[in-house]
Length: 269
Image 1 (cartoon, rainbow, N blue to C red):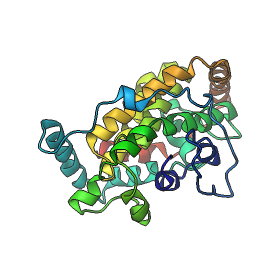
Image 2: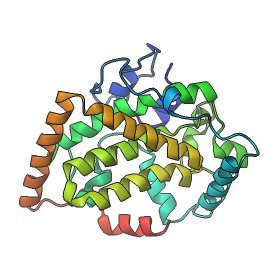
Image 3: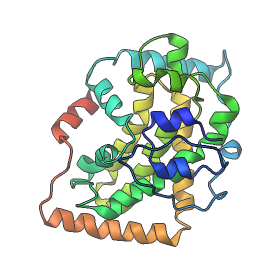
């Protein structure tokens, strides 16, 4: 059953909560959100238990790398990159829709770019749920529970302690979204993928995921996006989103984020 704690901590939409392929009971969604289903039929999401190795073992070189990454993240606590990671932790809409706005040079809102907005909402359900078989099997402790240092969403401490760390669902979503948005706006591919990578790494910066959690989250994000291309509906929405971003730029519409501030925060980490 998909973890209730992570769904709540992520600010997940009602669609993701209701799309639980294992049939588990999900918590009620915030009333400001509407139900949005993913693109993939139940049972067709790439299998994380097949695709991913087990998490690093204690005493291994991979675990030492994870611990080094966690120590480096702690040095960012309270700074601009920490602030961006805190913002990235909120997967609720409309907040998260603007994540790639600066990278593409256009707003990402339900009014200005509705097809792109829909792409993000619907694919979130497919990508986020793909991590759960592995998260549930291993129940890896999160870094903040090991190093006893702050993490960026302290109000969610209790829920996150009960939710497996490996792999990172947020990282899967951020990298998967980066791949999707890069297809929608190919002339900004470098900026888009850099933002998707930074978004996924925000989980390490937040002290809620190890580097290997982030890495294998990206693996699942890429796997799900590859699978999404088998959906005619997904492909049609990508094509529509391409046209609307071009139109938004032609109208002179500007990003719905403070891009100078975002750049400052990204440069800090």
